[in-house]
Image 1: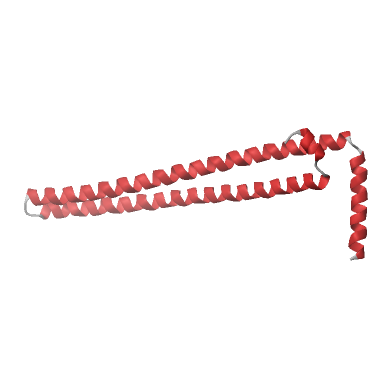
Image 2 (image 1 turned 120 degrees about the vertical axis):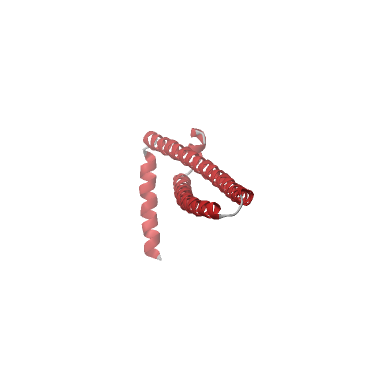
Length: 158
């Protein structure tokens, strides 16, 4: 918004702009917190999967014992091959999903942070321009005092 456009706005319009920017900033902060929470949930889920992986390793050790007790090498090889393929497929699928979700969350987080920073810069610019405008036009303070007085009188009439 240019300085000329700002000067053409009423004080109430300028204050409304600041209020809306504040609301939008709060919403972005909430979105950012939600993204951080989602990322923490993904980390917790990853830890759970690590535990599951350890359980699978334990089952594999137990399976090795069974293999030692099994009849032929061919049977053992087939059983091991099936277990390895299944475990590998499940692990790859899980890792792909986690990596994809992590990238999406990181992208959303980065976008939210960029929007937040842009809004903070915009609010700062508007605030600075308003302050400069009010400094250049001291009669605005008199106008605000008059508006406040009229507002108080209006409230008393109700």
